[in-house]
Length: 317
Image (cartoon, rainbow, N blue to C red):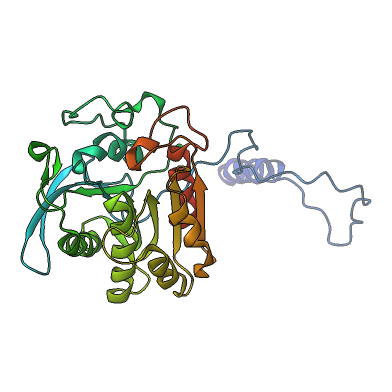
């Protein structure tokens, strides 16, 4: 009988002893804490990557996707019911600043084909045939548009002005003024355009159409037109150039007007200096000749670079 109970009892004793041997003894609550030592140098969290010399990427632009770069044919009507046509070159951002170009009496919107894709700055080659070999149809000498900068461009032809006519068939400044106004209004309606960042540029008759249209638009939509750049203005649309410069200077803030002319025609620019427009600037280009003839290499100042400077100041990159 002793043997029958002794063997199970011995097995239990051995099992309890083995369990106690496998336990790790714990420190008593009265044990002395280890002596203080210098804290280790602060280390970045394990999840934080080490700093690198790589610059941060540019922030992603907000807003809808950019429209395709190819020019879109645009038709619009004037206040007297005339239908006009042109092309809109969307920018690489959306919404974007927009430039409205107005041609001289000896041409039409084709004068701006190369300049449109230059300022659009999306790598697009001019898809239209140029009508001649003038300097402004040779983009190889154009100063580069800053990287990452892109402008929308809107070009159009004044009524009765076409290559078949070798320019404008008749001298009709009173209706060309209506054309300039209609183009500026249409510019605010184009898809992908910021209607508060519109500027106008023009040559000869367009050099007056640009500020005249800009002033009219700001009467209709205050703050829409931020400036006008004129190549050889001459009060050709029967509104004195100094008067429209003064009108644009009365806006708050004043609307910028820049005047470019050669030494023979610079008097019109000088006459506007007293118009009390703090945003007015003029530039004499010796030997520049008239209108678009200033858009050629070898002249100082460079009218093309002046255009870029004007855009940077008025509607930004």
